[in-house]
Image 1 (spheres, one colour):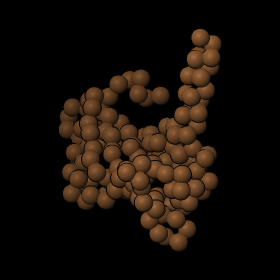
Image 2 (cartoon, helix red, strand yellow):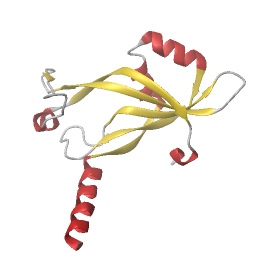
Image 3 (tube, helix red, strand yellow):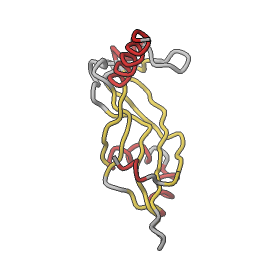
Image 4 (tube, one colour):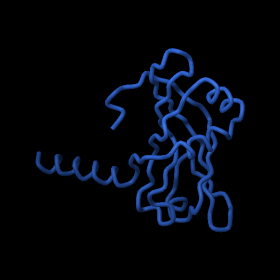
Length: 141
């Protein structure tokens, strides 16, 4: 039993070092949202955005990008109408990974490979969808 518990704890620790949450400023989120100008125009005209949100943080095993943030992004928003009810806006993205020569590093069956992790020096992102959900107070951490 101790072996199984130790294995579960070790697995959780390894996973948390690989990809974890991280704070991100509004500028990084709007940069991705603006990859779809029509969507950005609608969101910007109807919602107030907090100054920052959260994103996926790349772990230190990414030699050139350890600590960088990528989508999905989550940010607290409120309506610009009289009702200021808070919502959680999640921005889902498609990532494109580039090597030092600017060449795209292709994913394999939609998965990030060890080659991508080792050789990526820049990530490009574009929004593919957004979702809106009720804001949960515990999400403010």
